[in-house]
Amino acid sequence: MATPLSQGTLGQIDQRIARPSYDRGKVTPGILHVGLGNFHRAHQAIYLDDLVGKEGASGWGILGAGVMPGDAAMRGDLEGQDWLYSVSEQDADGDAVRVVGVMTGFLPVETGHGAIIKALDDPSIRILSLTVTEGGYFMDPSKGGFDAEHPSILADIANPDAPTTVFGAIVAGLRARRAAGAKPFTVMCCDNLPHNGAVTRRVVMGVAEGQDKDLAKWIADTVTFPNGMVDRITPATSPERRAGLARDYGLDDTRPVFCEPFRQWVLEDNFCDGRPDLDSVGVQFVPDVAPFENMKIRMLNGGHAVIAYPAGLMDVEYVHEAMEHPLVAAFLEKVEREEIVPMVPPVPDTSLDDYLTLIRGRFGNPRIGDTVRRLCLDGSNRQPKFIVPSIIDNRKAGKSVPGLALESALWCRYCAGTTDSGAAIAPNDPSWDRLTELAKAAKSEPSKWLAMGDVYGDLGQDTGFADAFAGWLGKLWKDGTAATLRDYLGRS
Image (cartoon, rainbow, N blue to C red):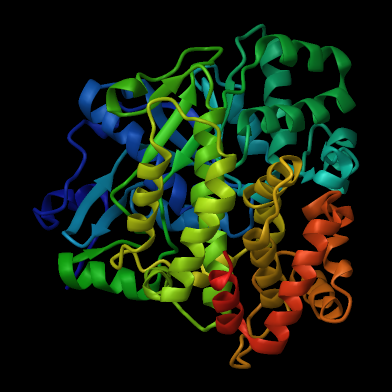
């Protein structure tokens, strides 16, 4: 029988499982993190767990928080385990399993985010960090970036004491700090966004400026928003994986995380009230994160999109299986080499060729069991960040984009809701109904798809791109994905 994970059972679990080497009772929170999904718990939390274990940095524990209704169930599960959970790093060489103990608690999930605001009033919280998904920052290219007229933003401006978004809660916390004459906290974004610190600053400032100009000026003058690049492939936890952990290691964990061994975190050293000594556990501090994030977002995240939609349309279930498919693997290689990598500026001390080789190996890791469906998720928010910038840069350079136009067409065809075999595709985007309607209309009028200004901006007016997109979309409907990929791959 598997042993339920808790502080009291740590001494009973399988000796192959690493566990905290420090006294958890002495760890106090210095970071309030919003969004304790699998990625955060396999990434930022691991670095801090390493730091506390290595350096005894007991003042840098993590206090968790959530803003979605489903976060309450996670809180309940983790509370039952004394805020412990396991992380299994998996590759062809086997597993490395550890229990992470750096979380000190998880705030109640409340309407109005009162618990978050109260916690931010505590000066021991020196960093507020975020993983709220790429689509959680109210960005709209058709409106020049930040959507200041979004109903949730307007609601936060009108109701500063009962915000609906985490950004309204951040502003409320900063208002309390200012009123108390206390130092502000650093706001650190850990989502996959180009210039993620600057994006986060724009949203926070947008709310603050709408509420109180003096407060907004104080935030602008005193609060820092470091840009950062984060990377680790972390699939969703399936019941089968959880059962495997119980079977193979005798550990009953309600919230286990599974991930690849590779991880990377590149940060600007821009913190207004100190920071943990993350240098000592592998975090790279650099003056400018932009080259690193540009490389990662375009080559890795963009590469994920390149393989996702053709694989999904051909009923491929897992990412490593997609990499074993000769057409999908060749499509990735050609698009990366010809249209993505040439638009990536040089990265300090990094070979783009070596990075591409690393990506191929990571995508092909069969132990991760990452699903194609996960990669296809939320294209309406991911495409404008991971794919469209490469298209724009190529077009500005006077270059054609047959591969990226085909990627866009594959996304459109996927959103029509059926695979090439006729199998139904379950809704897989927050805007699925809109996307499905437009994808079906685009079968006869491709321009309807490219008219999504929140995704493509003005690209729909670029006849070179629009004509390539329309040609590929027509071929996908007529001949199917495999034949269309062969056509693309056969062109010089």
